[in-house]
Image (cartoon, one colour):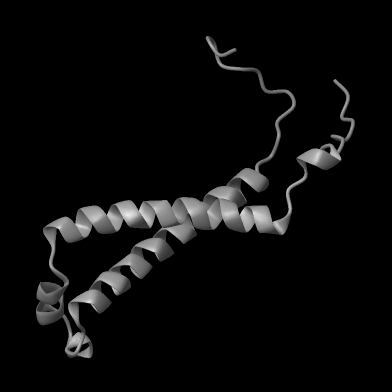
Length: 103
């Protein structure tokens, strides 16, 4: 086997920074929507405010929804960014064969 360098992708396949940002923010936004919907269907933000630290004592219900959504979105951003990072930095093993049954 030769160890020739891998050629760069064609110009139309190169992705810019803006596309990476979109690939991180949009799925994380959708995940935050779903997580907020499921979480706040069962939990009232006012109950969380009353059970939490005094830092949140003046928090209204709508602000609790917004804070929860921002929290879920931040988690989604970290997960999506980590996924993009791992995909971009994956090593290609040229000598590797496909597992049995894969085409």
